[in-house]
Length: 474
Image 1 (cartoon, rainbow, N blue to C red):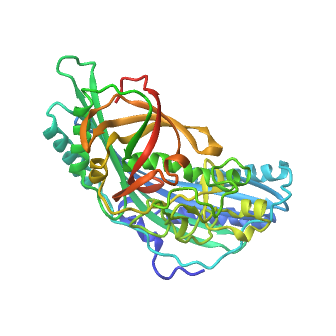
Image 2 (spheres, rainbow, N blue to C red):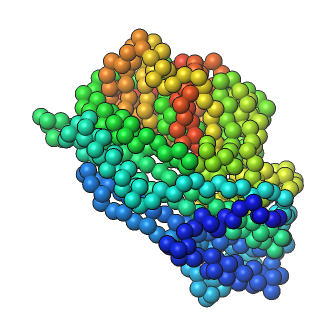
Image 3 (cartoon, rainbow, N blue to C red):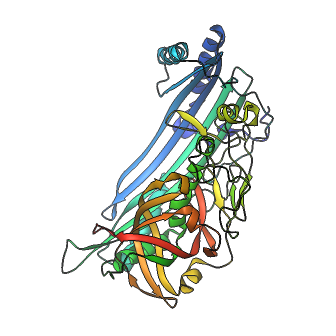
């Protein structure tokens, strides 16, 4: 596998932050040598993560930080036994200790009957997924812009948030012949605003806007103004009963629900019949207005992008829901062997969470419609405009059932006009029903990028709210 199209190591500004590659390559070669000497199949992953964060609170910068971290992960296999571990220590003894710990796991682990070994190389084309840098000075400018813009809405608004950038380089090497590299970067902006009541300092309104971005920076001024306006609006609340309402879910509210669908499409949940998608591959699950793609090779429309997945297998942009019909379940090699009887049926979606590897669609993109979000809101007959949700939890995984609370802006809309902000409500609803056939009225043309997905707003025929929220935070 060649990577002649670009040099993924160019993403790291070596002259400014130092060179991590000597440490990475030396550690990978040490761990690979130990595996070969002791007759193990091995996958070694070396990762360099750079993070720059500028936090602000009470209308001023409080903590600008920048740091880099190297991580080594080892997966060892012998026969049908498997073990893995990781460390952020980089000296030779630490890496030898890591190898010994993983080796002990393999020796003491029972055999896995279906295990077919580590994946073999597949030909893939590396592509440059790097976006523009967001420097510490540029982040400071964004913070100042956000604070000034929010203060123009309400001079006593208390503004806080985060402006951050991450840059990641990763090399994956295996005894099976895999040797690939990934690199990419992404950025994040969050603006919070609090407005206190003039007559009662304990009474506050809250607003928040957040967005990830890669190639196109969001309108920072617009984000701050929206957060400040929401905070000002939520000082005075309307009480509405909990029931089913016609709703427009803002992009972030859609993202909050979609992420549960993404995690429910993993191969284990699907085959163990614990997923809304179990036994429904090829079936109409969502409304025909909803098309969802996974775009790990699209730096413009996805936050998490990579040429190769967590096992070093090539990624591809894939169709997940075609007009609401489920087209694909993702597989890593381990679960492809487990459920399909063939490790080579892996789809290039391996992703590691807390040391455990599975497969998910981590770069979901919901196709936009033709109308902007404000037009969707203007078409509400009598219902609610929901900015976002929080404290979301599963109630019935098999049905896609969720519960959570509205947050940072819930508005009553009647005959297309905003009546006022509403006291927060708890929802108890299934995302399968919410996104389901005949429930989606329209999809917005404007999308926003979040950590694991990029979403438009949705105008829904009905969405169930089960109780008034027992909280004063709006």
